[in-house]
Image (cartoon, rainbow, N blue to C red; front, top):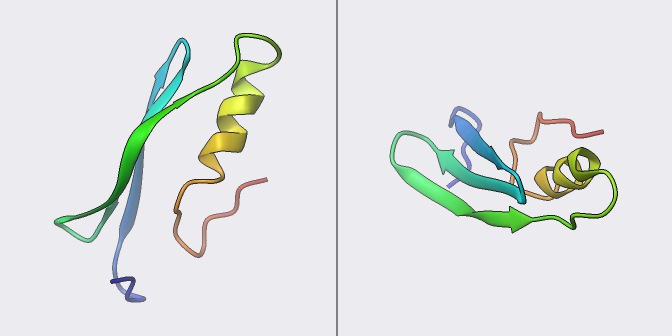
Length: 64
């Protein structure tokens, strides 16, 4: 499924209460999709970034 020459795409759609996402691999393989909600309290951007970093990503992706 995850060959070195395979492209993995992470699509993110931001929302007021969180974000929606889709992870695609190659030209026709959907790896994961869903919606993540965050708490209205605190820093929503930091919460969203933390959740995005937990999604399946390419090996070369660095989330810090």
